[in-house]
Amino acid sequence: MGRRTKPTGRTYSHSEIPGTLGGIRDYYLERGYAENPLEGTEPGQIASYALPIPGETGQSRRHIRIFQNGTHYVIDSHIDKYDPEQNQLGHLNDVVNPPRHRTIRVKRMD
Image 1 (cartoon, rainbow, N blue to C red):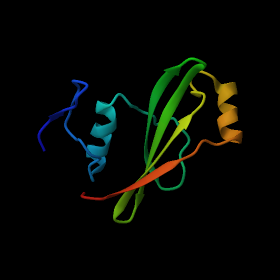
Image 2: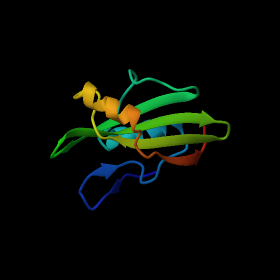
Image 3: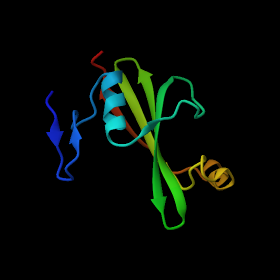
Image 4: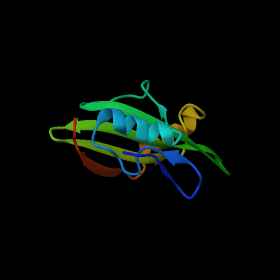
């Protein structure tokens, strides 16, 4: 697939989440996410990515977790109010009052 330029001027090799683990990795890394291997994993989780989000009340972060489920990759995302790398005590609030999660499924192509 060729590279596409978004209206922001950024260039991505994938405009949609691809169906390969390497493609998913590239998709998130191109958008500024960092691999987050130290984050606690859940059963079946195979990758994790995080993107800090600066804000008026401190720094939050978007967290992406990738699971393999048979013929699909399941991508779970949520936004923590407090980035645990910046504010561990504040992040306890995210543990007690979990943020809303969004889940999508992507057909595996690998």
